[in-house]
Image 1: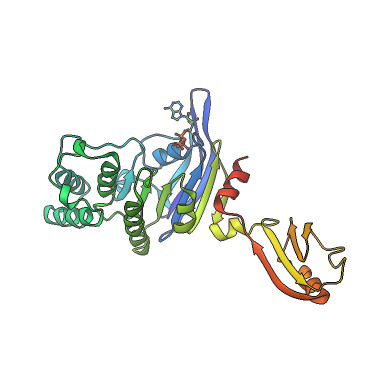
Image 2: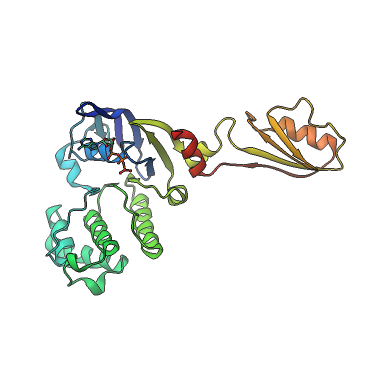
Amino acid sequence: MIEIDDLHKRYGDKTALAGVSFSVKPGEMFGFVGANGAGKTTTMRILMGVLTADSGQVRWNGGPLAFADRRRFGYMPEERGLYQKMKIAEQVEYFGRLNGLAPAAARKATSDLLERLSLTERAGDEVGALSLGNQQRVQLAVALVHEPEALVLDEPFSGLDPIAVDALAEVLVERRRAGAPVLFSSHQLDLVERLCDAVGIISAGRMVASGTVGELRAGEGRGVLRVVVREAAPGWTAGLPGDLAADGDEVLFTGVDGDGQEILRAATAAGRVEHFGWERPSLTEIFREAVA
Ligand SMILES: Nc1ncnc2c1ncn2[C@@H]1O[C@H](COP(=O)(O)OP(=O)(O)OP(=O)(O)O)[C@@H](O)[C@H]1O
């Protein structure tokens, strides 16, 4: 398990992190989201030992995260660091070796990954000759080649076409299934909503919301309860909780705490209930509200 505990970081007089804490469990995919400049990259750099925190701790399986542990992590930094003149397959293999794989294992893992990421035909090309999206795929292959025990990926999906997004998502899901904690940052909230077990929203160096997507969407007072009652006696909504807006037989309740069973009982007593259901906010709406 990766645990980030109360990280603080200043750059000169600029506060980048003001107490960031969260954890990523084994086999959990954690989406790290936040506006530009919120502190995601700084957090990930501290996690990977590229930067030191002013205070706070990063723990791995209960103990301080050591250099040797980090070698078994897969990291994709924000500043992509590939050797432009080196051939793709050689480069991925090289990083595999650097991270402890034996030569044959590095070769096999490289060839498998290039296949998965549709790069096999480019294996002998120099990285510098690739489009940006394809360079991104190589960067991902480099982060994944040694079958890391944990993944820390800064914007891994940015700039990828939809087919590459699916291929990468599949690889990440596999690593998760193998028990690795997977942490990635992204501005693609639909993707985070689709893939992640847990989400953390950071704003101005503080975590302002975290939990499973389901928890965030169903939070107290969140969402709109939509009720349609046919042939209801007028005034059936009198005294019910929340703010309501009626349009014919349809009534929308907002700001309702709890599960709305009281409203269901009143609706059933009043007429024929055709619809009773929560319309939950999307992650994008939750994000906007959290960082506002
Ligand atoms: N080397 C640096 N020197 C000074 N300020 C920095 C430095 N690196 C980051 N910052 C500042 O720290 C804050 C957090 O930046 P960070 O890069 O961690 O945000 P982010 O959430 O990753 O943003 P983005 O989504 O734009 O990548 C920002 O205000 C940024 O300007």
